[in-house]
Image 1 (cartoon, rainbow, N blue to C red):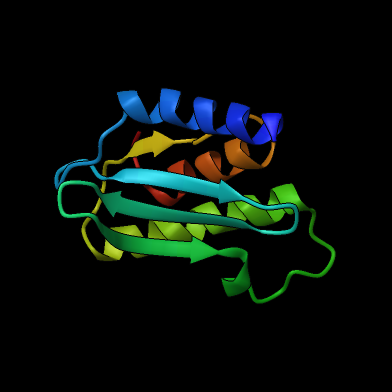
Image 2: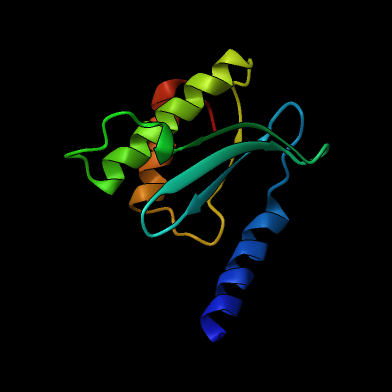
Length: 115
């Protein structure tokens, strides 16, 4: 119970400072034990513009979770550029900017997103 409330506190602390607009939407990350998900959100309209997850990766075999997270970032960037989204605000949520979250961000940057 206490762990959950600490996670929620971290999440709100980060989200207070971050707000996605039409010009600069928010890139939100969700990390579970097995997979990682990312989506680009326009908070003004409350709509998800683009999303990506590990389920879209074709060859998952022989890849670590961190390598797969980087691929998810690249896939998300490719989809975002198709919709002419070039700049985003990175929202790590309650997670530290470390490991899979960092790999996803680096993959998105390599794919062409700026944040």
